Image (tube, rainbow, N blue to C red; front, side, top):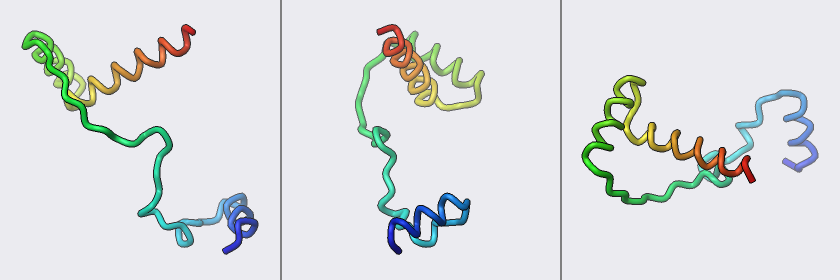
Length: 77
């Protein structure tokens, strides 16, 4: 399918997933890399309490809090 036809189909709100190879789809700037971080016990316990309160994982709490802080820093510049 030519890009022009694809764009027209998409703009009409038609389903284009049949012509897209989703196995190769990537989210820009969202690729994952594993890192190890050591936290003091009190901090892990606090994170676990907050994660339990929110009903999410410790990792989710850390990711959200870091993202919020980084966005705040970026907007302050």
